[in-house]
Image: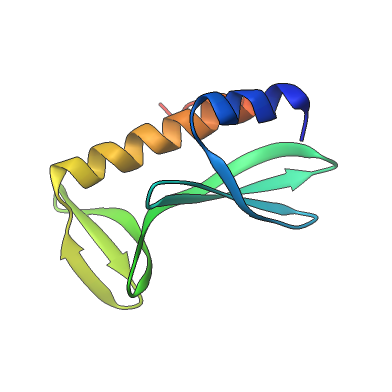
Length: 102
């Protein structure tokens, strides 16, 4: 990770929760995301979720409604949770220099 990326992560209050040769897990509050690296360069950001007592719950959309899904369990996502996940995902992408999805 470059010093510039580390500084952008720190400025957004995003921590490295885990890392190995090909992956980094980032966290802020109860939001988490997994990023892929290739030759020390971030190439993509996986689905962003929220840590729960049942594990990571990923934000999914069904019939226009937001849901949090984890291991076969789905619960309706609160608007605050949706916003927290979106904001975190955008902040991680910006810090890593990844393009935002359209």
